[in-house]
Image 1 (cartoon, one colour):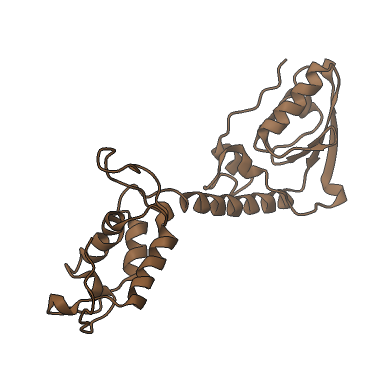
Image 2 (cartoon, rainbow, N blue to C red):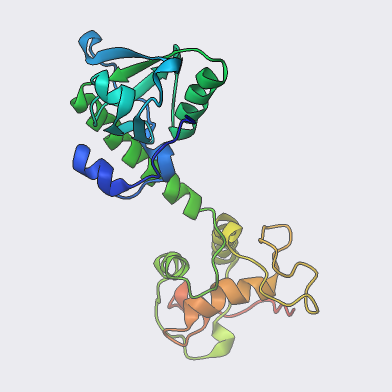
Length: 253
């Protein structure tokens, strides 16, 4: 019989190992984090015979969630962790399927090593959840924002540029070189999540992720100036200072 694995059901894993079904998980890989070194007596190796029929193993990731057929007769228990097959470590459900299929195609037995200490398995699951959470946070942190009103983007902008106070006369709202460098440095640091929102008729970089090489004042206006000033309906300089700053030079774009 072909080796088959149960479809992932975190509810099943939760019943076997409390906390195993909690989010966040990323498919079967979330159960595959290396666990702490188990005691020697927490290992059990079982031989599944090719001629004895279906192996009867059911798993999620590397966690056994059910045993029937050979597995049941050999004493395999839900909650054990599949550690090695034929001496080779397995890290997810695909590894397990491939190793068992390989043995079947070669008309031979397969030797499966289990970790039977559920405290070790629980520790591995905890490590996996932490790693999965961190990986997801890192993945999301690299995605481009859908728009300039994205909550994370707005938080970044408003935390960096807080309202300082109104300056009455427009001609006294000049920006100093030091303040300008602050704006540029912020844009360089954050623009990897900004994109050119113009149409292809308006911009040659339409839809492209921004970087400091292609970013211009239109991009800066959309992603920084407008979101930062909308709440107070103020000049952007009023987010940098409340002091009057008369201009020595005027630069137009």
